[in-house]
Image 1: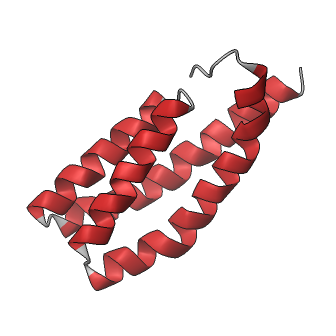
Image 2: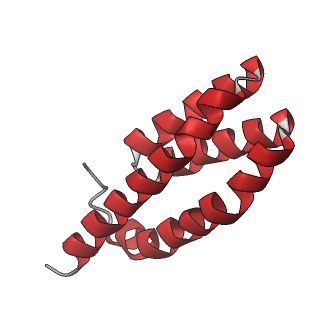
Length: 102
């Protein structure tokens, strides 16, 4: 996993990650339950864009998949991304913390 060398970005990453973990735990289940394709697309698009800005390409690629699932109304695959997102952000959080504690 790579993160930018920019100290300003590294300083912002913990809060950014915690915010996304909160959104995945609170907003995503509602979107999936209500099967709101517009909100699912927005959620995926926001993950893609914000994660690319922070250099989190792996997570951004999940956002791209979510966008596709919303266009296809593929709720089974969209639901399958929830645990993947949780796991990926948990791994990113551990990695960032290890980098900050060097």
